[in-house]
Image: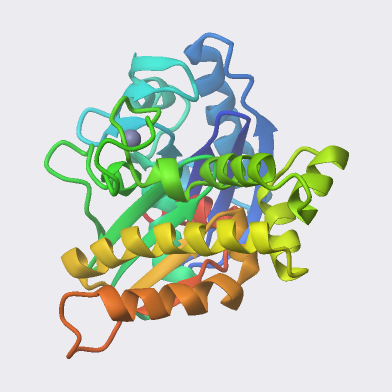
Length: 309
Ligand SMILES: [Zn+2]
């Protein structure tokens, strides 16, 4: 049995995986990230111990504990170099957690863990390679090649949301201009929706905004009801999604591209046009395209992937 812990800015979610890769039990506790890091890590240790008991075993009998953390973890030292979400810098996570857990502890980035989870047990199961893209507040991702997460010699790679797709474009949270994240995140979709509502005060989009703050789902709803302004926003947004995915296909030609994040609840409504744009834009048109699929494990992906590190 293995334990996976998905450390988030809001919650710490953990679960126990059996030898067939099935999630036996799971539990989530609040992170309360403002506390000193030693207290957060103490709670992670207690959670792992409790999870082992829930699965009918003890913590010293599990094979390993894996942790998916936001930000940039250093796999070899076990330190979190930097995490914006947690407000952590150079936190010796593995060393501290080792005070409560007597088995090997492995560490990686949370987006990489989600990708590994979908690769091993979700939408990309059975594929040799996969790139997962999560379209949320930002654009995150993970690259899995032949069963291994690819994150560069220093564990800081795989930041696919920060490839520039519009040189000199909208300023990104990372400081550069025109990153994919600034055009394909849910945050970007809402920005584009608000701009369109400003320009089209008689649109359904604008009247929706008078009742509610715009979110991704409302913009999709307005488009599906035939609102021209919303349709233009969605068309542009899907095109930006596809621009980045085409880059990923050209570079990696993974067997599967897994689309994750809330926006992917739209299913074929976004997947079909993305597939078409990618087919038109990809460099080599003589080979089969990667499978393009939406994530199937939801929040469990991060737990399962962490357990499999
Ligand atoms: Zn950026």
